[in-house]
Figure 1 (cartoon, one colour):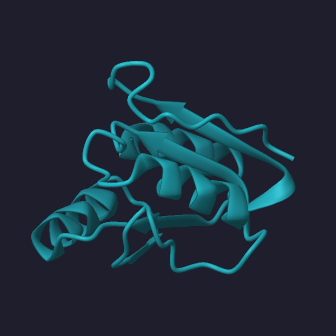
Figure 2 (figure 1 turned 60 degrees about the horizontal axis):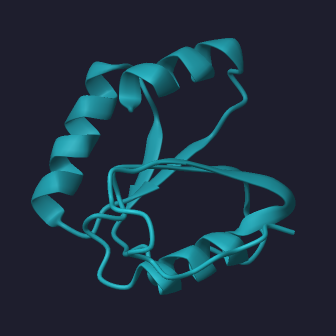
Length: 108
């Protein structure tokens, strides 16, 4: 996603990027990749099921090919709902089979 986020940051330099990655090796790899693309990403250790952010923090949350590795997708979606602002957006691209999650959410 970093090449696409780079374009977004170039269009809106006030954009702040935050990311989580539970695996230390992949987190280091993500930091290197972000740096390669000239991105300042606030990368933290964390899991989708317990996001390390306060309620109503983000305007937009993006997830791409994440839910295939999440142990509890329903809990992760609950967390997304918690940390996105009331008028915020959740944008995702996934490759998991429909119905796997078993949760339906209507964003505020």
